[in-house]
Length: 543
Image (cartoon, rainbow, N blue to C red; front, side):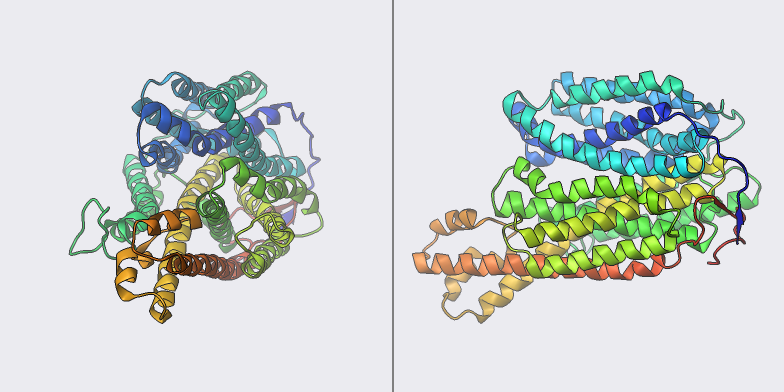
């Protein structure tokens, strides 16, 4: 059920939105700059890449685990005040990145940045809801998706250029400069003074924090520790079972306990950590499901393309950014322009269209992709996927913001932050485990059917247990064996075909997941901007 709004919409200056746009860029630029900086950290501190990459992991963990608590702090203290405070702490983290004398300082800096972002994420939603209405609000929400896309592109280019010419640290001077600009612009924002009477539910905070940490660690280590059976890299095992799936199960159980506890607290008339009323209708839950799937698909593609370009083809991160340019620019443009269609098409129509586009793009890529990502058919596939992805991320977020009362905008922001960070971890981890599993199976089947390669050489090389390697790396490995030149080329041929087959099969599986997502997209609401949804759970679309 919807009721048409009759109030005259008062348009506000876009100047405050510039600060919020830059705040989203601040977080996204920091995250995008980290992978480009890993090589420099390894060289400077003399640590393995896995140790340097811990900075990326702890940032995501801090955001996902603390974002719901951050939202409640914002409601208690006041959004404008706490926004300024965490912008200052984020600036402090960039100073730690610029001056940190050891890898431990770098990791600590990203913990500070992640904890700050855990409050910035819901602050952006709450401040948009406080400062803008109607079509302006939809445009403002869409700009956050644009900021994510454009900051990713610029961080790759600027970080790659600075890393090559000067070093890895100067890129974080840009992060510091953005933080200073956001702090100055924050004085144009308006917001409430907060409610000191709000109490933070510590039990719920611990439950959701541990759930997110368990799920993230479990999914992120599926490849390294084993999908089911524990590998040699697993820190421990239980009856031979990998700790990764056990952590995922534990995370699910803790998540269910969080929901049970929150419902119980709400029934008792106490303030919960997050109001589940923002997910009270089927259309709102469908928006969260759709958000999770589209972000996971984006993360899977962002993992797959660099994997093939940098590992298989042995090219640079700058080459990766060039290959991903059609996708990133398309997401940026689509996320910006899609709000112009809100007056003509309802969210359900746009949502179904978006997932049809992503599904078609993934199916197309599975047929046309080769080991060269710069071909025109591949670029076309990335372009189409970017159109669908850009439309969906903006749309589902806007559905949640529109449906919730202004006072619950922070809760919407916390759900957005938790969903996006968890989906990104899941999408990356599942893509990696899936591709490696398909590759191992394909190589094993090809070697079993091959009568040219002797069994003792197959056992010596043990290619079916290998990860993704380039042809040159494989030839170097075979040079230390008794393989003849023709046998070495046969191994290379098998590996090359298995890699491409794994990629195409993986893209088809992702296409299947995208197609299934049309189901929740079909449950998105039919109201448009200018129509106000009934705020009660009983109103609107039924679950």
